[in-house]
Image (spheres, rainbow, N blue to C red):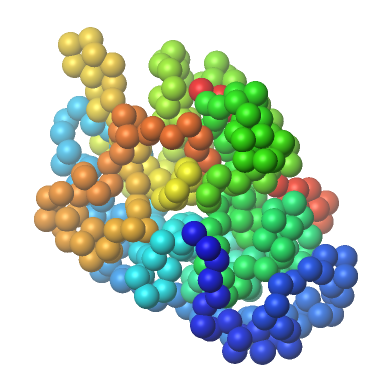
Amino acid sequence: MQDASVGYEESFVADFGGSTGTSTSSSSNISPCFLDEQISILLGSQVRSSFHEVPGGLMPLLRSCLDSDGESSRSIISGHVDHYQSVESEDSGWGCGWRNIQMLSSHLLRERRDANAVLFGGSGFVPDIPSLQRWLEIAWEKGFDVVGSNSFQKKIYGHRKWIGTTECSTLFRSFGLRARVVDFDSITPSERQNIGNSRGKGVAKQLFGPMDKFVVRSNEFCDHDLSRSDTSGIGHQILVDWVWNYFMSKTSIKVGSSRRVIISEKTPLYFQHDGHSRTIVGIQMQKGVRGSPDRYCLLVLDPAHKTKVLERSLQDKNGWQKMIKRGVHTLKKPQYQLCYVDPGIAHAEEMEQLKTIDSILVRF
């Protein structure tokens, strides 16, 4: 897919006193006063994103469906999450990453008071994609993710460029949020090197469509370190086990959970693979019968789905499984990435550390 400028670029850039050409300046050349001025202008010009607001919220509808989904099931879901769909006239084919950032933002703004106070200048709302693009450019100008920003030539506003977990992490980290990236990878270093050579790039890490590989350091996390005792399953089951452990953390269970549906304090997961990204809002376990193993389904909100259709299927308890449930057998890609946000706000020295985007590597 080729990048294409979006029609709103010139008017917005004019407000910032800049040009629509590619930016090549580094963060060291940006004066603090100029950066403060950019932020001040953006605070006054950013636009609240429009979306279909489900009366009472989408997640309570999902909880009701899961509650009636059989005696042998147990589910863990995030708290509040709004669904942001891609719009044909705005971002169809390239905007899924931004929509997932909006979904995570809706959770953070509602569920975490400290995040609400710092995100998007304390505006209290989820900005539209053009505003998010400007916030990402400001993060780059602050020195976050230098390696990744160079790949975009530090320019994202007004372009239909794919983004992924690295940009999601960079954006949230620039506000002091502790965004983390986890890589799940079945491709060996030698195989990745061969892929790079076949493309004329003799490097181990590179970009595959929207799949982010601009992490500076990967801390390898072997599958035998997983806390669940039944991680002997091969392949993508390791990813599913990780997601179960993440939402099931003993310190993350909220008051109001039911016997079959537990509400977790964990953020949703930005879920990236080559070609698309979605948001994982929970996971369901179906107890195995007659000695068969337990079965797991990721619970996923897809920006490609229409919110009103999703709402109706949940209200009618008809067809929602096909839209939201994703079993292990549907995970066919060799690489996946997740992004989530740990509690708390970083300051001073930790903020400097967050400027380097690294990841935990899980091989399967």
